[in-house]
Length: 178
Image (cartoon, rainbow, N blue to C red; front, side, top):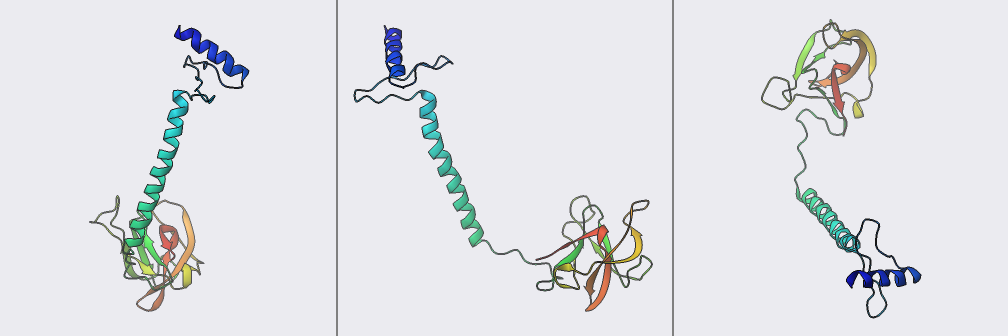
């Protein structure tokens, strides 16, 4: 008897523009006393899931914004000059030499070390402030390689070492601007 009623409601529903039984065998929608149709289980699930997912996304966003607003800003590396950026070694090349001129034979004034990832050490890295604002002024100089037998480069970045201009082979390191 139930199957007959569902077919009859579905036939009436189709004539009135409502959905009948679905192709996947889910029972069709029924009709309430005031003429509105009952949604299928899938439609009910979507009606409930959509507001819940929006509420969850909004809650996560608000919690993240609140945490960001209350968190203390990360301290800048000690060598960073205000607004200028800094140069540092990468995890691929664990050290970066600060030299007195733009050639690989120039005097090494300091060696910057990266102690993160695969590099030896307990963590952290050394850095040196850039000479120009936003780490500009990369110039061509003497040829160098970052590793024995590797590709040759000629790009040198001016940095500040003890108040004087020095140079790093920037293809062997990286620079970060504020």
